[in-house]
Amino acid sequence: MSKPAAPSFIPVPTGSRRGLLRPLLTAGALFLLGLAFAHLGQEVGGGGAYGFDQALLLRAQALRAAHPGLSEMMRDITALGSTAVLVLISCLTVVYLVLSGHRGRAGLLALSAIGGTGLLYFFKSLFARARPDAAFADAVVGGWSFPSGHTSMSAIVFLTLGSLLAAMRVRPRERIFILATAVLLTLLVGISRVMLGAHWASDALGGWAFGAAWALLCLMLARLLQRWRLAE
Image (cartoon, rainbow, N blue to C red; front, side, top):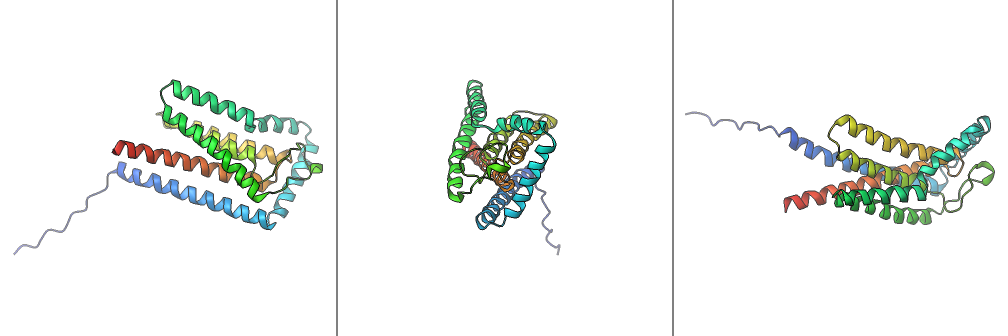
């Protein structure tokens, strides 16, 4: 009497494994960014970040004093994250995407920017953190400090835009370059805010975490909606 054959192992296609791995990695990154923002908010609210922030604030002031041209360079960089520049970039990109037939991408960018702005003002009002003293700052501005508005909105706009543009390219090196450029611009804007004394260092860290998390969430939701439409 012959024994029943053992069930053979059926390998999961590589494409399927990648399809399962990408959402898991995205969800994991989103969770870590949210956790980082929550931890920073707790430290800021409890005063635990003061020593770290004060040390970097004094260091930035010393660097500006030692290198007079540094302040002008940082002001040029920080302008990339200003409301006027980001609104202009977002509006022109949305119009271009609509004209080129990518209305879904245009809507995603608009939703990301508008929704992110609303959340940013909510968090600023929630934490109500005062900005660094004017005596230590090269750029004195009003409003609450945490999270940094320039840093948050730069992360939202540049990372969302970079992801959309990268998805439209085929060559991996082109995609990497576009995404790396978006990340670099986001980092430079946040650093410039700290170097000018307009924000505490933890404000920039919070802005990076919040902005990246919101951009990632919008991209993830857009991908899910696209899959549901294809399934229907």
